[in-house]
Image (tube, rainbow, N blue to C red; front, side, top):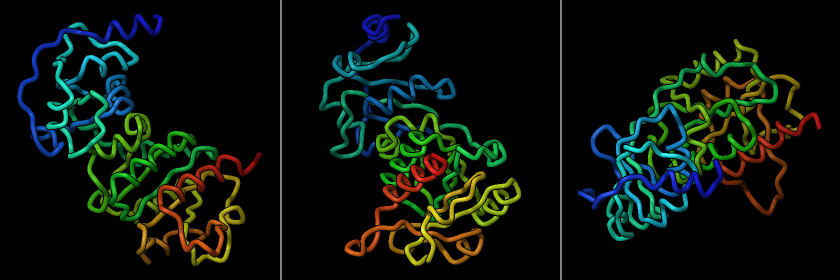
Amino acid sequence: MAKSERKRALRGRAGRMKGGRGSGRGTSGHTRLWGRHAVEAALKNPARQHRKLWATREGIESLDGELPADFPVEYADVQDLARLVAKDAPHQGLVLECEPLEDVFLDEVLGGEADRPIVVLDQVTDPHNVGAIMRSAAAFNAAAIVTQDRHAPPESGVLAKSASGALETVPWVRVVNLARALDELAENGYWRIGLTGAAEATLAEALPAGPVALVLGAEGEGMRHNIEVHCDALAKLPISSVMESLNVSNAAAIALYAVTTRNS
């Protein structure tokens, strides 16, 4: 199907917008996503269960893909959509309410593939950072990201917008105990590398040939001691002394690139 035809197929039935105002939270038990990349990826994800799409006509025009003929779409103007999302959120004329994704378990992503690292985040709570890391994980073909359930942001429109569609494609494993998850990674052949500026070795020196789990801590505090001792090696990125550290999402992107290119 040509792109113009796919766009026409997305222009399903639409009525006047009804209800919805406030904080960007979905109705009870649901997730509200916004922005073209996040919404389009969610619409294309067969694992998503959708409830309703609010959109401007321009927003519908921007989509690439097909909606079922009976998909619940309501046209709205920009001001109405702004009431559905977080303050000043760039919704780009598209707001989708859907069910959260189903849980993914660690044993489901342990393929032990040397070219597909797993990213482990220790108490990285900013949804912008987690979303950006997810986007890099998708770009560099990571197998999954792993977070501790109590110390990570929930699935949200902010995170999905930062992930630019990667929320729908990168498995997100939320565990109760991160140290136990690291033990399970080791048992499945992963070499666990904790990134910290205090390390002696650089990441390039610490990288093995086999499967890798990259462990990153929150900005400021870094990895907790209990997580560091569950790593096989600690490594640093060789940045200039004029800068003390990198944003955790930037560090994750560089580390993922290093894994991808280690044998090139």
